[in-house]
Amino acid sequence: MSTTNWTSRALDKIERVGNKLPDPAVIFLISLIIVWVLSALLSGSSFSAIDPRTDAPVVVNNLLTGENLADFLSRMVTIFTSFAPLGVVLVAMLGVGVAEHSGFINAGLKRMLDSTPKMLLTPSIILVAIVSHTATDAGYVLVIPLAGVIFYAMGRHPLAGIAAAFAGVSGGFSANFVPSAIDPLLQSFTQSAAQIIDPQIQINPLNNWFFTSASSVLIILLGWWLTDRVIEPRLQNTQVDGDPDEIPKFEDLGKKELTALRIAGLTMLAGIILLVVVLWPVDSPLRAPDGDLASFTAPLMHSIVPLIFLLFVLPGVVYGYLAGTFSSSKDVIGAMSKSMGSMSYYVVMAFFCALFIDAFGKSNLGALLAIEGAQLLKTLQLPSMVTIVGLVFLTAFVNLFVGSASAKWALLGPIFVPMLMQLNISPDLTQAAYRLGDSSSNIVTPLMPYFPLVVVYCQRYVKGTGIGTLLSLMLPFSVCIILAWTAFLLIYWALGIPLGLQSSYVYPAP
Image (cartoon, rainbow, N blue to C red; front, side, top):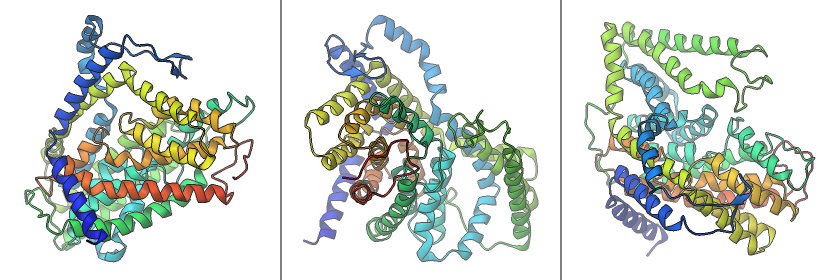
């Protein structure tokens, strides 16, 4: 039996088993109950693991006490409404919905398809997905669904486009040519951890920039090959059976539509120019106090989703009125309502997801899992390169349970950064290994807040799409990315190539 046939049969098995799992919302509910039970069983146990956030042993909180249950009930609404991905998705989709239902997005994609060589479609999608990291979570609500639309319009399977974009947005989360808010955020944890050993050390916020930029090329080439040679061939027998009214249609643009598209495009360009003008002064209100635009404290980094809303609503409205798809304000509101209707399934899943994540964090089970795993790796006293590989895979495993990149690094960083510094492994390298493990496993954990949303995108084209379907599509990406990316990091390190802008102390290559 050939390797290709064996791989296809294995992925088919994963899809069948995965699709027999309960609905994602039910999985979150079951996970919530499991967390409650485990918290009660382990709350009386003593653990030697030290929580680096408190410098005290980890204590598992019993969530089934009367006090905690009362607190849970009183906060249930707040837990749901303050769930960050929910607001990001809904606000962005309000704007994108207007642009979509007015016909602006379809018209723009039609023009783009006319000038994009079919053979370069996949790498172009992955490149855009990678760059979208700069705009925080914009890739999930904008790039991934548009990739499905573009692939479908080009006569290719839409699920292949969604998978490629998901791999770029989430699987390659730490691969980017453009610095983003995650860089200084992780650097802050790395520096405080490194100063445990060397109080004078200073970590550059762009200490991984050269590596993440080079990694972008790796992810694009790997994703291109996997999409065209592995994923899309598997989808040959998967029929697109979505509601025809919900699947975008691409017809030739008339003179009226072309004029509307041109003016709407100029409207969007004017909005971007206005934004640049506002951002240009060093004392811009959208900059951080130190004048930085990419800092996590910069208002710009917290305004990406509202800016997406505005940059799509305005040209969408202009296009709709000029093209005749909108005749009154009721049509604009109707477009927003229709886009919200398609998100109803995600809202239900987000409710249970928010409750589970809150309980998991409050119980301290996530902290216990991360710290105990790190301590186990530490006690093995493996060679430096093996330790780096172990850190990558430990991070990937922990990522299946603790989604936040910063939360995991807050737990793992104070353990691994000082430990590996004593082995002449730089904090920059340790952070890069962590980011690699975190990114490569994002696309195979159904407990990731945006995973159910991607399932919803797929169901627009193939009604029977379930967790197993998406897992079978993304597993090849995850496995290949983690193996190839880890090898790339080790080669990068062995050759002594700087990972980014140097910190105050440079550690030697092995």
